[in-house]
Image 1 (spheres, protein in one colour):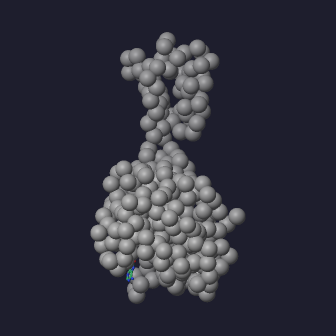
Image 2 (image 1 turned 90 degrees about the vertical axis):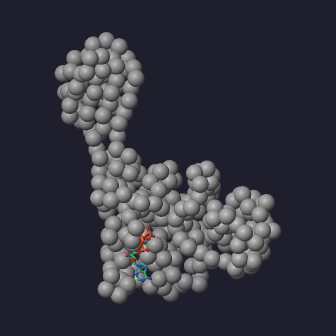
Image 3 (image 1 turned 180 degrees about the horizontal axis):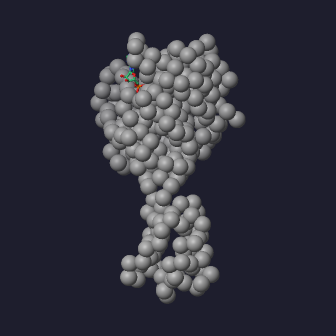
Length: 301
Ligand code: ATP
């Protein structure tokens, strides 16, 4: 079931076109990532989905509602973690969660969120005394407090240390497993690859590609290289004529096969048929980072 449908979205700030004809759909229970260089229009796009910005053109439908006209109803069913948020410094963590839960008709149990997001020991700490990472986790807990069907996380792990980032990924996976639809704006390719079912790459306000992380890599950088040491000599011609193989190079005892498609399967199958064992087998393929650079000509950060 489609939960978010965006068609031909346009948004300008004065003369500057921030979002230029963006279309995508998100299915229920998906973790959908939006990646792109700084200023690509990611935040503007999700703000239009959240109903926080009015598009200049195109249509947005979230859970069957138009954020322009059904904003109040929508906000009860969509949780949002903004890229930048602030709270009064003196409010304590438990007070913030208790206050926010009072805004929703059927809030999640905030004490459970406190435990889940590793904030139980900080429940009586004032917001102003939390570390950057703790503030970030509090804002994610606040995005989940209304027990939303859709949650939008903008720069989820920016400012977190590597361990906190990994812990956060596990929690986001758990959100996804509960059937909640997640839209994740991120700069981190590792995060996108680990968490997202599908990714939209945006560049200069336009969609450069939408696919699974593996599909993006295969579509942009199709060539793979397989290196191995055969247990007995293998005729180059045997490998060269296989489907998808572009080149075969023999360096002493090592063989390198380059090509596209289901290369690993075709190479290992033919070796098995000839009772040859491939020792020290290595596969080299482009990374999501490489695919991103190939699509946009830029790195994310
Ligand atoms: P980042 O990764 O840096 O957060 P982004 O992809 O989320 O970037 P947006 O924040 O959507 O990009 O911004 C897209 C473009 O619109 C940028 O050039 C930005 O300077 C501009 N922009 C964003 N908000 C405003 C605003 N309120 N007024 C004017 N221009 C804006």
